[in-house]
Image (cartoon, rainbow, N blue to C red; front, side):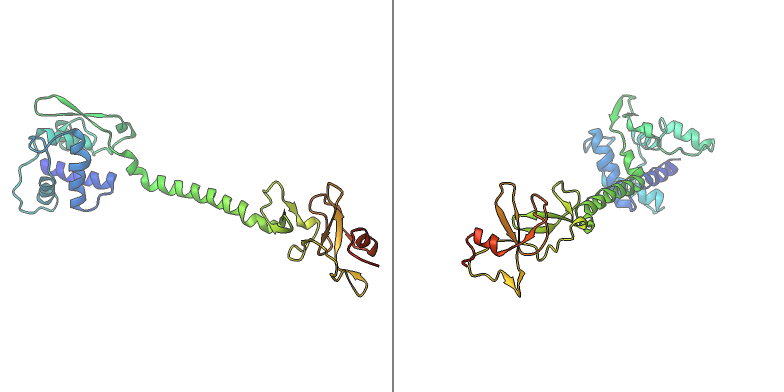
Length: 255
């Protein structure tokens, strides 16, 4: 019966904690379960990694190993890890061919373990969430991908919606979620060529009689000049082509 208990115990560690080899299972028994009970080395109920490993080799691997069987406290502990009240309850289940029940979510609460003198020690709840990690982790990953994807779309792909933003003296592409953005599909501005410029005397204002610059007034009523046709980036009024009269008024043309 002890052999079956040890086999079931290590198998359950593998199922719940995803520990695949004997060393990790033995270490889990010692570190995750025993140390949290406050059982120190030298205590008769203490389980060291060496003994846990040898129990595994003796009963699971069926090797000829000399190791003492788990005492009453240790047997009760293993049985309770298997979701039984104690070792006697486990034996009754085996004797009556009642299948071992998997731990329930109610195991989150602290459970009690009886030792040799029938006193009780509280043990922290086993890490039940590990049992469901294969479901929880992919679910969280999908949520994160959706959030990240939405962020990328809004801040990058949304730029394909042809929204632009005025920056000092030129336009730049931007996300349509930007509150200051405008839809260029309404104005068809060539943002690579459209610039705010400062005119000075001696510049070539006309080519074959056609104007090379356009102008519009800002909110303060001051004329501002631009490299090509379009709208004023602040007032959104359509720009006008320069004329000799405008250039004379701006003291840019002597005639």
